[in-house]
Image 1 (spheres, rainbow, N blue to C red):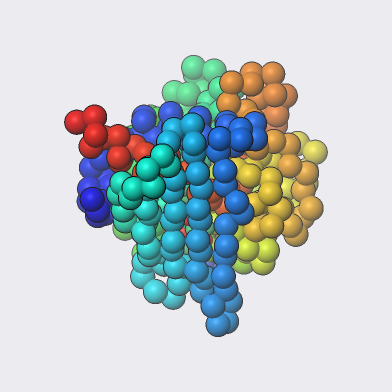
Image 2 (tube, rainbow, N blue to C red):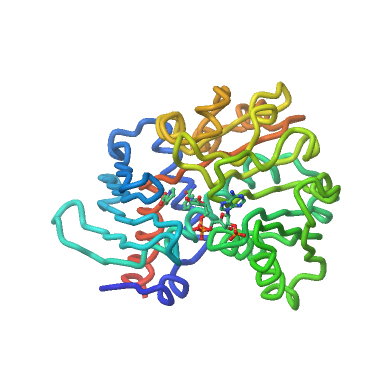
Length: 317
Ligand SMILES: NC(=O)C1=CN([C@@H]2O[C@H](COP(=O)(O)OP(=O)(O)OC[C@H]3O[C@@H](n4cnc5c(N)ncnc54)[C@H](OP(=O)(O)O)[C@@H]3O)[C@@H](O)[C@H]2O)C=CC1
Ligand SMILES: O=C(O)C1=NCCCC1
């Protein structure tokens, strides 16, 4: 069975995705032997701007195996193309294939949301929850997916957008104008409104830092999604290594190999997001009074979680 882009949108329930994501990320960080995820292969093509990525994993506990194969061609539109395949780990049978563009968009935004629940919402008062402000930086595929997931799952008081090409920010603003009362475009990243923001999602393919310590308020939570090679980065060294900042990643092993911000700044990694699931003490230690950064590069187990939701939505129907 093949799930095209519209059936991925239709069948990928966000609450189910968040539940399976927390489980697999938690088991990954506990080094559960039933979950195997070798480091992915990221093959540069020609000028090293284009990549072929292959991401396998096996979950013997849930009885599945998954592999996502994608191309990353930033001069093509869309940048990412490919397929996710889910197999039964007992029989070896292929259970489904699915459009990787939509799965990648949704599961990345859902993983950022999970990190935001853990690192930001858990320390907020009710009053803060009622007045929270979100900024999306980079209004392409990931920017759209982040705004979609973040507004479906939380009521934001204000949303700000910024994109290098202002037309992309205007398009995203228009899409949400009837649904969100306050959705505004920042004139640049020194705009004072960025300092009001409680949660920032950076969703760009930038190779230069876009945000530093002085542009944001202390205690902000940042989901930095964009970089996945040593020369890519969205956040400046002063923000990464500040004594007021704690950096959390999806995988230490992957982040140290792929995340430009971490490699270039040599920032300390406080935890993996999976270590924070069901660990109140560590969560408090990392998030209270601190600016938090969740740096993701993307893991095969996140694609597995999405493929399981699709498969089970059909088999349980
Ligand atoms: N962490 C994860 O799990 C995943 C990470 N990613 C990464 O997230 C990023 C966004 O993905 P996606 O939306 O699919 O990619 P797109 O190629 O569709 O969009 C790229 C975005 O980056 C912006 N951008 C590129 N270069 C710069 C720059 N120098 N300065 C500022 N903005 C810049 C573009 O801005 P504009 O269009 O306004 O010019 C656009 O908004 C990519 O880098 C991708 O690799 C993707 C999937 C998963
Ligand atoms: O699928 C992922 O994970 C990706 N991570 C980095 C950029 C390309 C897709």
